[in-house]
Length: 434
Ligand code: ATP
Ligand code: MG
Image 1 (cartoon, helix red, strand yellow):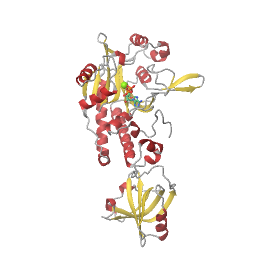
Image 2 (cartoon, protein in one colour):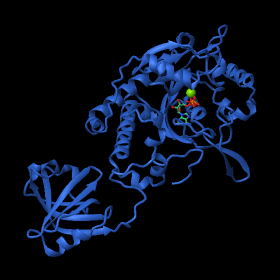
Image 3 (cartoon, protein in one colour):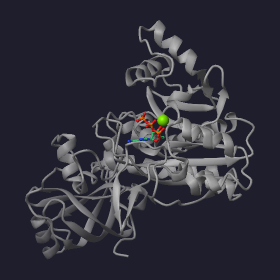
Image 4 (cartoon, rainbow, N blue to C red):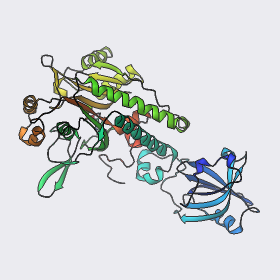
């Protein structure tokens, strides 16, 4: 390795130690007889101090010619110094330029010059060198690790289902067609049908963290055309309550992990991750409509709760995640189990947090005849679901599950205004590059 120490790990108690560092030139200050170079890596910034009399002449010369954002490696001695940032500095013996940066930068990675989101996404590689976005992705890593931890501990098996598919999951229009030899094919909107088929295969508890593709034309702050979905499906449930319990337990665990591991840097950025505690609030769709009506938002029974309504519920429940249950049949796909035929309600639920939908789930219909009838009722052709339906003909346990949007969850957890902030290279209506 070209380095044995991270910049953020250099501390005053290492006084006198010889270290090898490597990273990017964050800043250079030349005061004539003394030069300062700030070296940055993914953990932070450390000051290199070069007093003319104390460092080799060629090292001193080289430091003065360093360009911002060039990649360098350094060998030097740690010195505790109260006047240096963090109370510590490194006196270099040797500085080597590993890769020189051009002088004109499309974006200032020190963050001193403000740039709008579009400019930042255009120069995303430089943008990701800044502390804020880097922290978001460190949080993202902690979050998915905690999710895996929780699900593995609860008997879930990680699977990967195909992303090139022959039929629409829900018959919807939000599909991206792909060229697949001589046949029509699409990018998967969700792993839904395959997760269910694995219940037929006897896997009992599966999860998948993978991409979903949605050809939604509208550009909003909470939609992407390619997102990551955390999906589970579980068998032998008594009702939809059990997958809901997995979701709230998992989120409680993952939020707590993020709080434990990132509070310090998030606080610096003015972000406090809320404590979420299971069990979450539960209201029925009907109750949600009543609450909205009290606040002057009228939603007709059978309609989806509009964005404005979600936002209002977010205000009412403040920092509490809330399950909305018993959605009407009309709002849900064919594979959802009906709860009350007369009232027209289902065993479907959504999880809302801070006024945004994070997850949708349900107990599914596992009875072949009923499922087939529901496909027809939805105006879809059972023939195009033949392979899926086959899984229900040879023994299918009662089952249910949910899909949780990873970026949706992160954007609400971190309270960032746009989903693109927590996406490395977002895909939206206008953006296919970088
Ligand atoms: P919405 O109504 O908010 O557009 P949806 O009900 O169409 O979402 P689902 O099909 O229920 O979405 O997908 C499950 C979860 O996947 C959503 O709750 C959300 O967190 C996430 N998700 C769905 N579509 C997108 C998208 N276009 N961009 C980002 N996340 C998405
Ligand atoms: Mg939904």
